[in-house]
Image (cartoon, rainbow, N blue to C red; front, side, top):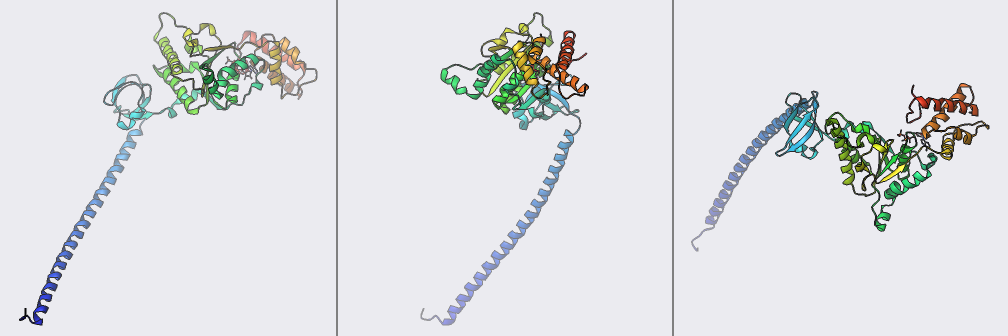
Length: 406
Ligand code: ATP
């Protein structure tokens, strides 16, 4: 150590410095090389991205192309394993097809699918919102009719309040008393006596959506179509709850079973079964009321009025004289009447008139007054109207609104 000169120390430091500089250069070289490699990769990836973008675009336009030509409609009649279904096309033949996983949640028996014309592959599953079923129905959010608009049906109103309105408004009462509220109510009586009016008034009082369907709408050409419609109506009611489902002319699907039935009869039978199944599977939860109406209670299948189905049957008869007077009062409320008009006498004269006929009599009387250039309706106008409406009635049928044909 003693022999070491200060010069030796400098040499050592210089060596270390050179070493460090060497290392630094190597690191810098490596880094530059790494950066270049990454840059090259970036360009490659960008190119790949562009290529994939182009491919997605072309596949999208391919899908659009598949969707654009007119599609064949078909109904699913059977669901098999491995994403396969049997469909019956609207043009006749049935097909065994595969559906894609993305449609799996929409696949159900009775659902409608759109098929490509050439390949018959399933292009789309048509969900209920797009279903034309709604077009055959009358849907009214909280109709504008209250019990005051109904004349001469006090008893029927009371019964309807108990059986439909109370379970909708106050389901707890039934729970506390320990009884199940009636599931469905059947109105029967001649045409134009106020059955629809009663159902609408319940919907009004309970703030419910009124869904009316005429049962003959359920009788369709294709097998399974009727039951699909029934399911659709109940689904819609659940969506819109609280709701009143009003099925008019229920006899169209609920006539007694006959021996030796045709395939058409069997289809009608299936539709009724679907309706009963929907009602059976329905908890009397109270947020949906079901009312049916018929002019022909005598031909109804007894299965319909079993407990848990339409277990309350309410007659809506032709009004008596007092009832007729009440109805006349309602329909003349906004009319200007001559002092000589005696509604009680008109009620007595309108022997077999239904509510709809009485409404028609009021309208006709108004029309006679207009023809005479009068704004007041006279008792003679009512006499003429009575004659016109009731005599026409003898030979012809009345429609709902009381307007005559023929
Ligand atoms: P249908 O069996 O033909 O379906 P319906 O019994 O359902 O007949 P509604 O549609 O309720 O009869 O009545 C038809 C029209 O007649 C009503 O819009 C109403 O103007 C009048 N009307 C019928 N009954 C009464 C009534 N009791 N009070 C007041 N208006 C009535």
